[in-house]
Image (cartoon, rainbow, N blue to C red; front, side, top):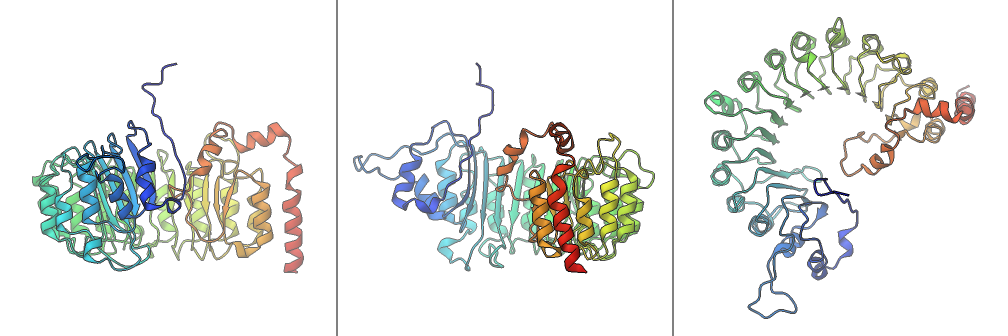
Length: 491
């Protein structure tokens, strides 16, 4: 059996804190020398440095250097406590074949200079000249903190060695100005993916002369870059082959930006969360990119009403939209969901959390929704998030039972509606993951243990399995008992 051309992947889950620091490198010395990709969910920067440092081994002569551990690594993805100059330098020097480097930290306290990234650390990146993809992100998970010791000079020094870079992601570089970001755009001629998060000094001027570059960007993300306005987007869309555009948290973007975005005929994903767009702006999409768009998020766009749904879906027969996020829209009501259900668009993921006017009528409409393949009521929805919707009552749970939503895998609800019914629903539908504590659904790449378990059932719809096993009528009794008990409590 030939397996030479097959991709081999092994996922291991264990707690690194169980290893004593002086034993950690010794354990990894046993790893295969052919290992090309390594992703670790959390490890301290000190352990990374000790792992990759060519120290003298315990049974070697003083002048004998230990051979490099993991010499074939090409892709390294780490979540650490602190991204430091020492760690970055050790990685860049020790891994000669590295093409992908992804580092993310989440400090618990403000880093001291010895445990932080500075201009000196950026200068050490890509010492072997092979790096194509770079991601450096400081998370705001525990503390509102940034890379305060990096400025435009650091970006300039990095860009000087990264001319062949294809993908760059920078998060939390609060002292980098337009000068630094423009250096990247004008130095990295092969760049097709650019992501900037919390770029507090990034302004429209970065894109003023973007037409003078040879860039052909396809993936662009400027998340929480609050100084960007509509003028920046008008310049950015000169990259006509854009496929992914993430503008979440850019509060100053409005309908003029959507008018420009509407000209992008290849755009697949558009995220506009918390922007200043209105129903008028959504109308610009209806005659432009909507036929190519696969994923749209307008979460927290307070000006949107039910009209945005009718504008998007009325009279459109070529829609490919599969993912739609309408969360936190105070003016979205059941009427908007009814319009969505009537459109028969085969949406597979629908998020409507924190919508106070969404109620039981919306659930009934979605449960009755039939797609063109006519494979059951609500048949295409695989994810439905209704957490903290104001009008959801116990009545909705009757429409979440079999035979409705046979492909549903993720459901977000408010557990306090009636915990017994929620628990009964979870037991009644073992393939359905019911979340009732407000957690986001399907977004955590480390929480995918169930994906391999579910894979065997992808080709067989839940509805078909019920029919084959003859459980159509018998397994709803527990749900009915829970509803009856709930009715007694309500009375």
